[in-house]
Image (cartoon, rainbow, N blue to C red; front, top):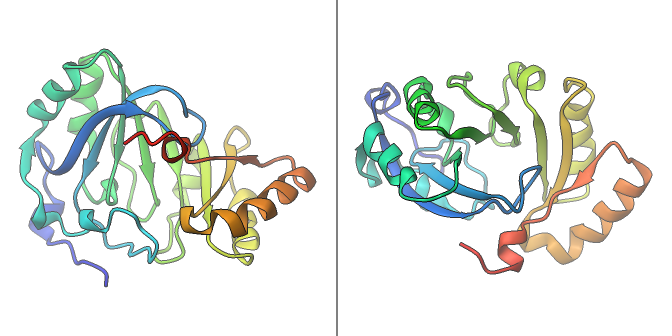
Length: 211
């Protein structure tokens, strides 16, 4: 069931519903293997049936935390890469959060479905569209990375529908949905061999048992 996000929560900028924040290793996509501070915001109405953080969907389940406190938490660690994720982080205007992170010396990355207009100041935008809520065209123009999660064989054609629209500098990644690993990964391997404009993204943190 999709969770409706109340308008008064959507308008938050200097305070945000924070599900969790933690220092770890980025496990996926172009920046995999790098130390990163993850900031997971609560709230999502995209409704992916295979989402592994459904507890993030209802923003009201999570405390409202000041941006200053979020940045202070990030500064407790040595890494200076901040990854904003969710939920769907672009439900909120992220101009203030990213400005404060940059003032503190962080590179800012976002992982988004592209279902909401872009806000914030970003060093890297990972655009991961989902079938459950249409993505906005602007992300094909600005994203540094297209990461498509594949759940079944038909998703290859859907992935290509985005690839042909992406800007020429965007990196293209195919990633199997984790529960479909044994079924879909062999198909991805053969597909990338035949379509080398794509690369494979692995959820390396799950293989290494890293949170």
